[in-house]
Length: 312
Length: 316
Image 1 (cartoon, rainbow over the protein chains, first blue to last red):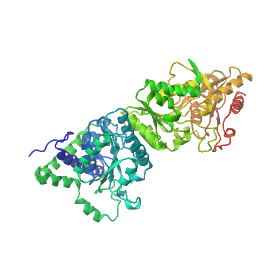
Image 2 (image 1 turned 90 degrees about the vertical axis):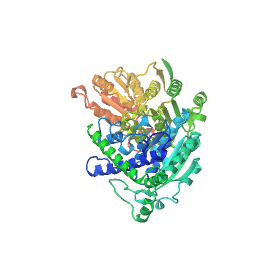
Image 3 (image 1 turned 30 degrees about the horizontal axis):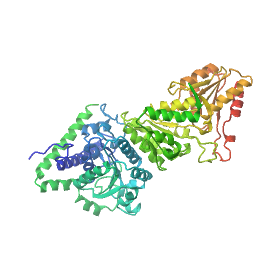
Image 4 (image 1 turned 60 degrees about the vertical axis):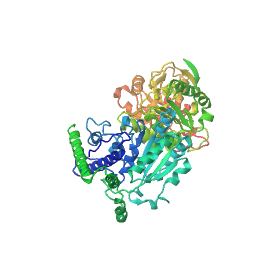
């Protein structure tokens, strides 16, 4: 059984989702390792356990749509077709780095691919996403602007200003929250009343959907629906329930306390494992084949890093 | 050349830009139905858009629209409110061109009318230019005349980085000629003389021109040259240095306190001149280092009289 190549077409989508989530996880693991080995200096905010959100969303986008990453959505770059080599060039200031290694690597942009610059100012990038949507609406481009953010952003005034305007103007905007229930070391229950975020967005004129952020197919299909909805002039808020299985960042490590039970529970819902089970359950692949795929992708990442280092 | 008021030149700059640039939009509060009603009737409420009172999101959205190639004018009600959207101006607007390695432009004008002498009180009578003076890639315009207000605006719309546009309502009624060509953001020598250069921007430059006219009547005919900066950042250093080299004396007038802003910058700039070029140390006449009361801001700010007095000191 051969594994089809990933593509931006909506065929073989299950494979595309699995492969892109796998590449995201392997790349982030490699980035943390390379940093420990002193080969790169930028810190990584691993999306382990949350990969389905960026990958599922981006798989649903069409040419001309744009995405603004959060700081934990490297998958959005992979999902929008930015190669591993292109991403790694930004980490090591390769002379071929398209962004000249100016922006922090988790915010690197490829405007020609629809990946726009993120922002370190939590919430500030939401208004920029609304501005992209405004331009699309004015110029009747029939495209959507999608933006990722963590649930800590619920404290940012820019979220509410953006929803206030975008809801009223019916912008083709999709807000995607990676709702992992933690604001770095602080559980959501200490900073807001409810885990669910849909009640925050509805009064502003957003249609909302609470989705299983650990199910790449749910994310993908929900985003397809969201795109169709947003193109019709109805902004959408996707509340993706998830849990971070990895470090807060390579610099800070694990900062949460008393999460052993949650970790054990959410590891059972690991999006990569679930997608693998789905594919195997439908006899679309075997464990051996997936193990082989993993070795291949790991090697490709190592090769890309070596190639890119050779450019300097 | 056409003679018109500062206020009308501002309106004409916007009108001409809207006509010539189909991808230009204007966003602000109470504009389509009030401040820019005529423009909205001509170009539609899609391009002349009323927003809620959300300055941070307004600037952020302008940056996002600029990523798609639109040009955007953001109308802020008055200059003090720049503090509300400081993050969006500095982090989102100013840095876009840099952090995208020039792949994205940010042709955004943020209009920040200075609203002094209108009884707005300490939260409505600030200038705020100096709050932003150390931000790279941020153009800052302080037009002093109808010509500058018109051409600085048109010039800003040709730049790939954003512009803070500090028009001053206290000089709205000043009239003057608008030239037929764009001076390209260079400083303008608006009075010619050979013994003293007065350097300023916005209202301060207007005061300097009035002072030069009064001094001419007081026996200092052809003595005072005025350099009106227009853009205080980037700043036209050559015109400042050339004029000051010629006259040998410099008086820099600034509405804001002296801690920061173009006045201390220009004074440092003049250190580049050989010592023999200056007859005396450059002087600064600046606003008082205090907040301004609503009942009368004037005692704490430069005036035509104080500029005349300072100039006479320099000319002794």
